[in-house]
Image (cartoon, rainbow over all chains, first blue to last red; front, side, top):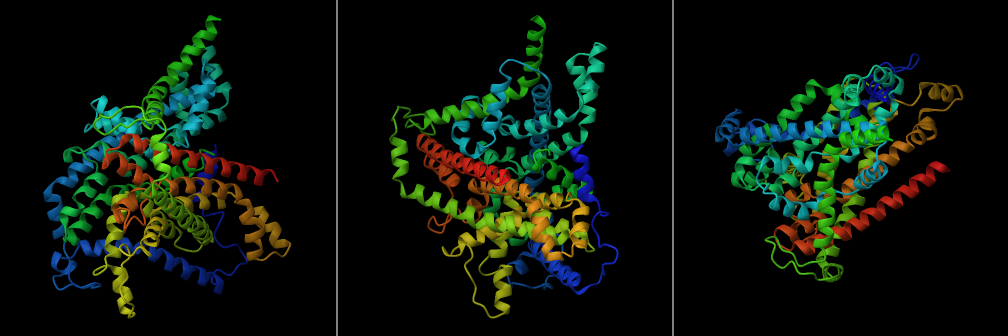
Length: 297
Length: 291
């Protein structure tokens, strides 16, 4: 429900736009438009500069500074070289695999736990709930040392599971989903339970279908975080074949040395998947980030 | 009675998958880390003897620890202010309903989707002293090149600028969403009362956004305090430790100095600071909303 108002708000052009009786071409609006265009252009410059560099030859990229029209012309040579080296596709695969696993496990466990907190009174519920709230302020970055030791003990260093498991739960998402389930009228479930359906069944066939938007929002948020996470995968992987994209790029960045065009080509390739996904699902992603950012409100 | 037990079991069955991961990968390391902080543990596991508060005593007299703490707090101040103020300004501008709305939204939000590594690759190239775009443009105006990441007086500012570019999209989206939930009638009423645009901004919009600002401020301070990625990759904490953050010091003590016990002690000291900051914020925000 809250998601609905938010989505209408954030995508609704109707509410905004100039009001009748207000001159759409007034001087102040023109000034605002210029400022906005300037800021947006500034924000796009690092992308544009990286793309331009990636299209140059190595000689041109390392030669003069701002040349929009380099002597060797522009081409995809740097991309060809980077892709044929084969590391980036392999790392992208690792990122995809681990991010999907993290997202699926996090969404499933958070939804189940959120439902338990919302609807079922069980022993120790209050304790567990308090622990989850307290856990929200613990930055995972502070646990890297004990966690790494634990991973050594579990033999999970340099494995996919070693990357996945410590990222595959999110106390904040449990709270967000609990709050959402709290808003669903209990009567909807009572009818089904009178008919003899058990909790799991009610959860699966009544609660989950009503929660699709919030589940999507949580999934989007978790996936972006997992896809881009650096510190933990960086610590738990030393084997280059298992590295995720951000970690792999960081470790070979220096190996490219002065090959600026290839360096930028690999950065662009690494950025591309999420940017393309974003362009296709802009509305859903923005809605998802805003919803989870507000703690599900 | 049996019904209640059954209910209790069902509850645990639902909560169990989460509770197991939560216990194994958060509660256990949190307790284990506390234990380690009182030992001389190393990466390999040797030297696990109990040292009492020796690690804590050492940390409190370690100039590198204080330096990294100072850097972190300074970074938090320098980054939080523009990340809150500018994100609000951007959201207000985009919310004016000018043409090209999706393009503005896209431009400001896109960097948020990038991994820290990619952000750093872009910006290392922008900041490159000889070939970078920034010094190239400055040269066009006859300004001498600046060592953006190598000059201790400038490096922190460069890190903040990169952070601003990278993460403003998140705050911007939250403000934009909040702005669009302000009821239109309020503006109509104010317009009838003769309130101009700027009056409306300060007497309606900004007060209405107070809860959002509180939330953004809280999230931003916590995020800034645990900064690591972009600093580690842009400057590696340099030059001469002038940008090294606490999380980087924790990482280095543990994984390059191999002192797991000492590293854990710093983690706990820093955690105490985070708790204090969170409590202070909680009190401040609650007081404001109760007035």
